[in-house]
Image (cartoon, rainbow, N blue to C red; front, top):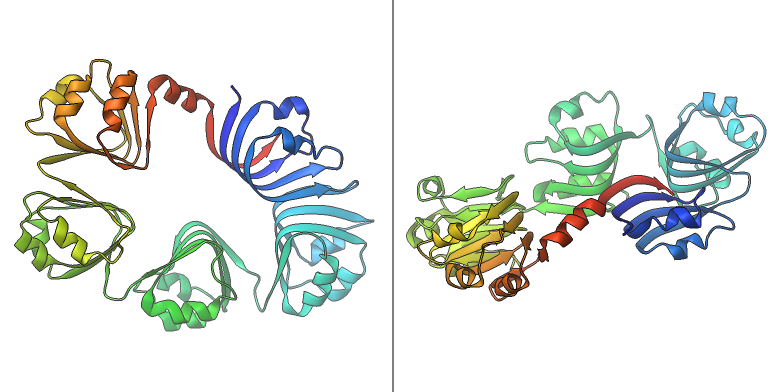
Amino acid sequence: MGQRIGNVGVLNLLNATEESTREYERIDNVGAVLYRAGNSHLLSLLNIGNVGAAIELPEGFVYYNGTLEMDAAYFDSLEGDIRQLINGTVIIGKDVQPEQLEGKRLDFIVNGEIYAPSRLLGAVNRIFAKGSRKIKGYAGAPPQFLEGNFVLSNAFLQAAEEPMYLVMNGVFNIPKEVDMELFDESIHNLDVNGVLTIQEEHEAYVYKKMASLPNGVMIVIPNGYDVLKKKVKFNSRSIQSFQEKKLWTKKPVIFEKDISREMFEKAIGKIDSKSYIVCSEELEDLLYERLDRLETEVLSYEHHYVLIEGEQGWSNDQFLWMDHPVNLIVEGILVLKDDVTEEVLRTKVAAIDLLGEIQVTDKKVKGALQSKLRVNEGRIVEQGQAEEKVRTGLQNIGELAL
């Protein structure tokens, strides 16, 4: 069996052969495919789910992948005919003069974004005319690129010597405590490729700085809501400090069985959840009344629940020790050992909320589990199949050259 790969940023087929492509059974998503004239047929040999762009490298062109900064010294160093295909980002320096662009024999194909001083936009548009590119102008300093997970702070804004052009690739968060007047003074433009999280009260300030909506997801936290940044478990003691609290979260929230209806009604005003919520059946109707999103998954239990995180192995004895039927919430991987029987699953499991994976060795046990499923967003597999997936699977690759 060949390799299975989840996501590939760039699939490089420039030096690929039919033999090298046969090593891969499946690629789920590809941002861009690069190929030479004459080997486009290799694409048909690969089982690819989604392709963002297919780019042919013409004869005589060299290939560059990534961010390429072109300042005045760069253009001065160029000699002869320059033919280049660039997959990524091009930054034209603010010291570049128009004659440096017009006086060279340049032929560029760009798949990505080009940032250039506003005064050069006309010349840049003529020279970089080919490819799937987007040209953006800047005034003052060139764009500053931020990668990964970045939380904006007042200190970061205060350190700016002049208004910044920020390009954020990843997860960008503007928290409630940011001074938005300082933000307005310090940020000239804002581009976000990924996830942008802001407060509702900050929306107008942020929109003013963005030429277009984020290339990804924009999350707006409603006014008056407290953000839960991690999974939270409330009990009868911890919930007492709340007074009609409004909660916003992307993480699971768990209400333990010792919380009474009176405690819950007094403590919780509203919940805006993008994850699941665990509560006793006694609180279920009250919880639904306070949900902002009808699609939020409420996982109720009568006697007891067990949350499976990470990887856990369970034997038949572990089920037999339960005094009452248990609700299993499987977020990680639950491995059922060989001695687990259909009978113990029928009598000791009330329901299964499957968000992760359950591994079994017996098809009859698999059938017994399926009859208990209440939420099924994961999978039940035989252990041999799971091991094969681990052996052959890769999830994310920046560039794959075949």
